[in-house]
Image (cartoon, rainbow, N blue to C red; front, side):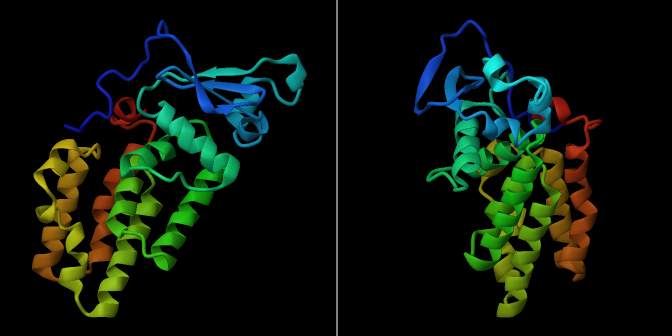
Length: 241
């Protein structure tokens, strides 16, 4: 049974709305699911998402005719934390100073839901570059990809880890962070990645270790679990979005 990322995903619309101190200027208002109001220039949303542009009748209507206000509903995917991360990256093209793997993964869910396809691809390329150039933790990037439903990002993290292992001739020691047997009990209890997917990862690791099969090659077999999460028909859809 997969783990739900939210036991109560929809916001109580009767709660008071509080203005965010940093994002207080602009002609477009976003109200997060936890009732924080953000303001930004309309082009951040209208030009970035064809879905949002269509919602507000752009380009048939001018912004002067509108008082655009988007109210988010999902407490996890559309929280103030995720909206703030989105605005920071979409406006300034820079990573927030403080973020968690779960936050970053949920940001990918946000971008996927609202069809910010160009920004999503930009982030994937950026993270792939950080794996190779800035030596970001491959397990961290893997978890971000798994939470965010980005199969290519997970594969890049896994392959980067294996490449480092090959260069150092320490395959077992270097790939060990990907061994679920080494993960803390708290990770298994609290990680929002569906448990079925974690079990598949564990079996893939054991099979690879015992039989000496290609780790990257075998990865493709259990990576299909992640593809199912991205499929709109998936049983995970209502738990993740």
